[in-house]
Length: 96
Image (cartoon, rainbow, N blue to C red; front, side, top):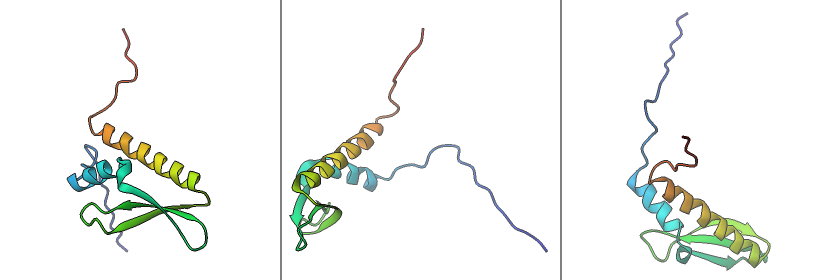
C-alpha cells in the first residue's frame, strides 16, 4: 500500500486582501452599526453592508440596550486594532 502525503511551509504570512482591509475600516466606524429590538425583547447589533445601504448583517444579540452598545464598542475596538496592525509591527520595548 502506498501513502501519499504533502507538507506546506510558509516563508511569510498570508497577505490580507484589499477587500478585507476595507471591511475592517468600515467596521471600525460606529456610524456603520445599529441596534434593533427583536420581537422577543432582545437587542441585535448589526453592521451596514459596504455597498448596499439597505442591507444589514446581524452580529450579536444582547438582553439589554447597554449590553448591545457595549458589544458594538468592543467590536469597533477590535477592528481599530486590526487596522492599526496594518501599519506594521509596533515596538513595545527597546534595549540599550
